[in-house]
Amino acid sequence: MSFPAGPLWMIGCGNMGGAMLRRWVAAGLDPARVTVITRSGREPLPGVRSQTALPADEEPATLVLALKPQQIDQIDVAHLRPALLVSILAGVEEAALAVRMPGARAIVRAMPNLPVAIGRGVTALYTSSADREARAVAEALAAPLGLVEWVADEEAFGAVTALAGCGPGFVFRFADALAEAGVRLGLPADQALRLALATLDGSAAMARDAEASPATLADRVASPGGSTREGLNVLDADHALVELMARTLAASARRNAEMAAAARR
Image (cartoon, rainbow, N blue to C red; front, side, top):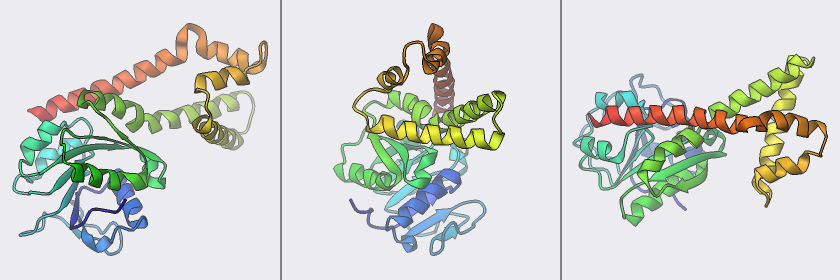
């Protein structure tokens, strides 16, 4: 799958936008075709054109919105007519994007997560457009970033954002908690962290490649009356871990809904 033809503009290039751009260039996108528009005007990569304002008398074939959702009304893009608008703005719905850029032929919402920086992320995609070329272009941009998942219903996009988009933050917090628990048992902090990270890495790889579900794998590793089972009993009591994660994702989903409501105004 090849990258889209024509100029690609990216408005905003923070942590996520910069990570995506670096992966695209590493995967073969010509940096000379890219224009980045940011307030600082700093060049994110050698060969990429960087500006503080939209280029005059030019049009992008593909426009990527990678700024903060709260900044969407600080830019005037209503006059642009890209073949494809890709937005990674959390909580900003397709209809709200269409109001701000009525000239876009197709709009695709994308929700990448942080591991896209190493090509092992998740990018969820949604569009109501039946434009097959636009869908193929969006997929081509997402493919070098890791797993690509299309979401059929925009109402589910908030849930996907809460799980996969916000998920790395929750996993990082769990890794830190696992290491801290080891410290409380007497391990040196640096050793506990190495053990926690390696355990998460190996377990995730094993779960990804296994035919059995993670729940089944957990039961398989827990011998009756053994130490793993005793620990699982704590996590499983009153569905403690499931309930905690359900509340965590619900909080993130509520915030997505609040941002969506703000963008509709």
